[in-house]
Length: 118
Image 1 (cartoon, rainbow, N blue to C red):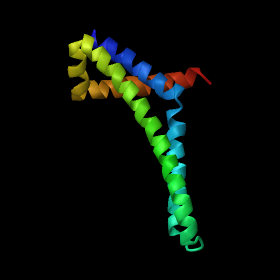
Image 2 (image 1 turned 90 degrees about the vertical axis):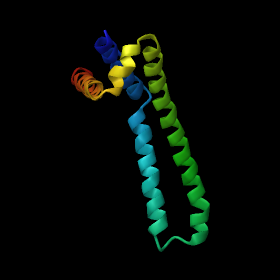
Image 3 (image 1 turned 30 degrees about the vertical axis):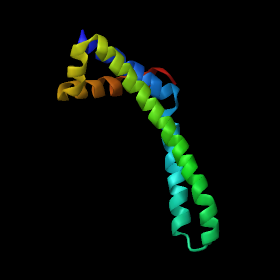
């Protein structure tokens, strides 16, 4: 029963990640970090301009980080609620076999989903 529940929870988690556009949010952080690095190492940009733009970039990184945090907490909440009703599930998730199984379920589902939904 725990394995089936783990499969269902992994499918739900992948759907949450896809529906919230998690990878686009993560990509947004990467783009801002690249801009920050460019501004910091550029000798053509004055310190005055750096003082103005870096706090704006910091707010952007904070916004994206908060979105990622909320998405991950939602997934954790789903697993926690399910674990509250099925005690064996938490033991399975925290074991090495359970972690590998969850990874296989999630990656397999993403592969199948991308194969059929184009």
